[in-house]
Amino acid sequence: MSNEGVIYRISGPVVTATGMSAAMYDVVRVGHEGLMGEVIELHGEKAVIQVYEDTSGIRPGEPVLNTQETLSVSLGPGLLTQIYDGIQRPLPTLEKEMGVFITRGVDADAFDLEKIWTFEPQVAVGDEVVGGQVIGHVQETETIIHKIMVPPTANGTVKSIESGDFNVTQTICVLEDGTEMQMMQKWPVRTPRPFQQKYAPDTPLITGMRILDFLFPLAKGGAAGIPGPFGSGKTVTQQSLAKYSDAQLVVYIGCGERGNEMTEVLDEFPHLIDPNTGKPLMERTVMIANTSNMPVAAREASVYTGITIAEYFRDMGYDVALMADSTSRWAEAMREISSRLEEMPGEEGYPAYLSSRLAEFYERAGRVETMSGDDGSVTVIGAVSPPGGDISEPVSQGTLRIVKVFWGLDAGLARQRHFPSINWLNSYSLYPASLDQWYRDNIAQDFPEIRTEISSL
Image 1 (tube, helix red, strand yellow):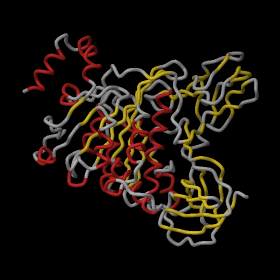
Image 2 (image 1 turned 60 degrees about the vertical axis):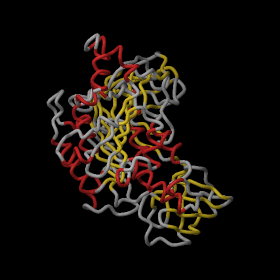
Image 3 (image 1 turned 180 degrees about the vertical axis):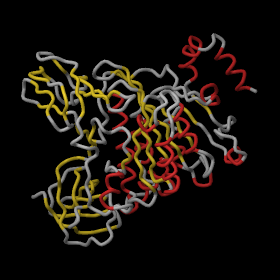
Image 4 (image 1 turned 120 degrees about the vertical axis):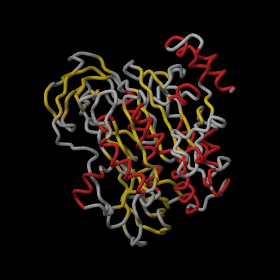
């Protein structure tokens, strides 16, 4: 069979193609416009594809081309300050090309491939290098040094390494076996990046908000859920965490959020000043904007794109905070795709694999020893928007089974302009026992006892 097939059936974002050789999660181009999609089911000669763009107007008989690649992100200098859509297309670049409405079947480089960066090597000819090892660095923004790493799948002896000015596609290092390395590398979004070992969560993420730091602390490399009804301040709380927490880098995923809310974030973030450096907060931020009117399948891609970028910066030895706002919209997208695939529905129509997908995402958080021997962390803070504020629904319950911190928001407190509107009666953290020693060493010997006394009042 060839890499080219034809469309057999179309059901919204789900397209079935025949006559094409395909493997699971291959990226394909659908129709004459070359819409981007991904193979999610195989039935004999039929491949079921979820399309990440609007499918209106395409018809059976149009070609489908298999690229034989998996959905991957480009990683390298130029990521910071970027605003992407769910499949890592930079929105400012697309706006320059076609205005405020994105046309279909359009590709754009994730960052400027021609921009020149000054590379300074940290290894010499004859050195042995392994996957994930840092071989040099560039100054990406005024505050962040971007470390250039050996791709996780490569290793060997350095045959030659250059220093000086290069763009991200030029070869900077060659190994004895002929492997050429550039500053840019690609990584499949569904595959977690490797590390040496995962540490126990024994260091808190200082959020800058007293109720969180003292009563409901979150560990670096931990996972927190923020369920709350509409208008209770989930986005406000996440923006405060992005600005004031002691994470060195922030990845903000607007997954299926309302357009006006996302516009507010996009307008405000570039003007926010980082209190630690006095520089714009965007200098240490990557944003992924996937609004509720964008194709639903791209919501899933946006979540995986964000966590992969966060893991990449973790591998450099940075502490990264990832804000996912909101995982409920991602679950709704899964429900829609699942119903179009005619799968057996679970509770409230969500697919039976909802809990495992949520677990798969949150388990990519953690404080680890990286392949180069540094310590880095990804802390995931996921907002949940339960309909009517009822946290007994499947997404909230699936999230609470995995995360160890529950910051329950209260719309009544938000209406009284009490922010963060954390309800201290139903919120909890399971980290205090493992963080107590840090608090004793860094704040006060009797801190855990005082916290217990405050909690009981």
